[in-house]
Image (cartoon, rainbow, N blue to C red; front, side):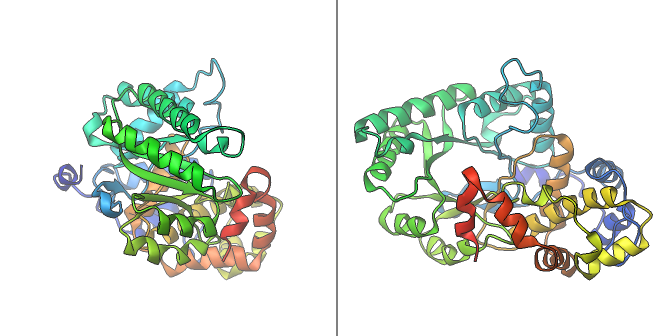
Length: 380
């Protein structure tokens, strides 16, 4: 894909021009109204030929050249999971736009996600050899529930087979074994690895990945599983403990995929806040803007998200980020993290202004609860 992109005319717009057109600068210009929709409109206007701007990184020792921003998430927000949902047409648009803008990796967790993506890939005529796909299994849940290693192996293979069928392919590039249990279980890990060896022998999976929610367990796995190719790790401006894992992974040639970049939606669930107290950058925006608080808040969430994605990509140990994207507008916004490149002082000022000056810790504690309580373990 990268070779094809070289032949395309690059987008002739730099960050300063883009922000000026967006009417949103950290120096005090007026902020655009309409949130994510206005961002999308400006994107189209200022960069009509978007394709060719995505950057690619090698995924550890696999040799796979994956887009810096990829498709992830569970598609829960607007009804992907509901039976009879009439949202497949929108999913087709999202996948089509993502591919057009340079995304070449589509991650899946549950089989229903693979079904949606499989249909979308076919609808857009996207060729299998131009993209990378993954399949996940939660068979590790069976550990400690009176299931034998053989049963876990069989369940794992069966689940991957369902993913492959749903994706309308004959293989996946990445087999992800999710090990989100509270404690490291050697039997479960060995069962997952054995399942992968069978899948690889049968030509159904190319590389072995582990997704883990415990930083201590993860370091054990890195040391004890020489066959490990890829890690899925939570990482963001406010969940940075993974930085202690990166050096070990790099030494062993293990690729790193960033999950939970928005910390379970923390950046989008800020409510009833006084924007004037969110650091000097936002104070300037507030003082110079004609927009009301609700309008400012929409653009603040959007800008926090983009700044955070750029912060993540600023770390060379990250190969790709897999944020959830459920609308075309979200795709256009998120790819800008790769298009714009290096994080700026203004981006950092925005992140620091929010998390350090306005109840950042409160929002994290509020969001990292229930199913996603594990994210607290990744706080540095």
